Image (tube, rainbow, N blue to C red):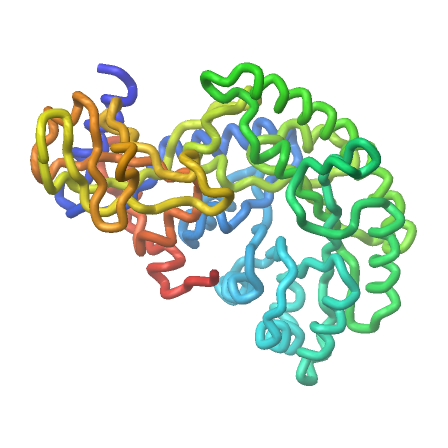
Length: 400
């Protein structure tokens, strides 16, 4: 029996008493992936990206492991909720316009000490001040550096359009704006190199593209390491008590952690290992988060239909944003139908061995977005469900 066939047998036995659709997390794989992130971080703490987990119980599980420290959140409302739930180091990774959230943050000493907000424009400070509603707590501020690689005098840009702050001088100027403003303190810097951490460099069947990606990423890492170090020096001249410099992502942990200027790395998707993380030379993870859909029809030879399945991931639309049928191995979408909102036909010889009520296991294209579709995760150890825990959705928290 192959490893994948063994996994399917385990998951089927573990969930035989449950009705699909359902979602599981294989804790053996989850823990092994956590160990691999710590190994690649080389002694620097790993801050967990909550948007890639979206389950408080699993955030608590990974933060209890040596080598992990702090949460990287995705909305201010989530940050406040996590801080009130006992998470004492929450870095909001994106700027916010949540006025009610800022009023709550600035009025509560516990929240203000636990949550760090993201700023890359002095106008964001104006918004926070206008939202204070009398709250006088000092706001912890992290400045974000644009990591994009700019070529040919800036005519070509590689990387996400995030912060407008690209040069050391630009970041230092915003640091000075924060330092001049009562009620704010610069405590951190963040630079997320998504074009390195989030782009696979070993895509099956595309050797030329994969080589081009590796060349781009190598050049991007060299350029960013030099620029990031210069930014840190420039900001420390303005705010010498900066507590942390955050960088990286699942696909670049070991490279980013090797930079002297970086004090911590961020990762989250590497815990679940969704399908978009199958194509890296830098690491190999174990799929830990899956969802199962029931077979409800057998339309013909080599075809079964499962209930649900239309769970696309965010990003530029394309086939790589769809979940992938994982177990049993060998199933594929009908190209004329794809993944459907209510039902999904699947083609391939394994379909003939599936019966009505059997489960087909899928992997989502991304990590935490799976949890927006399910209100609970069934935690599997061996061939047993040992616990069932709510996702953010299951706790009534849909932040975006």
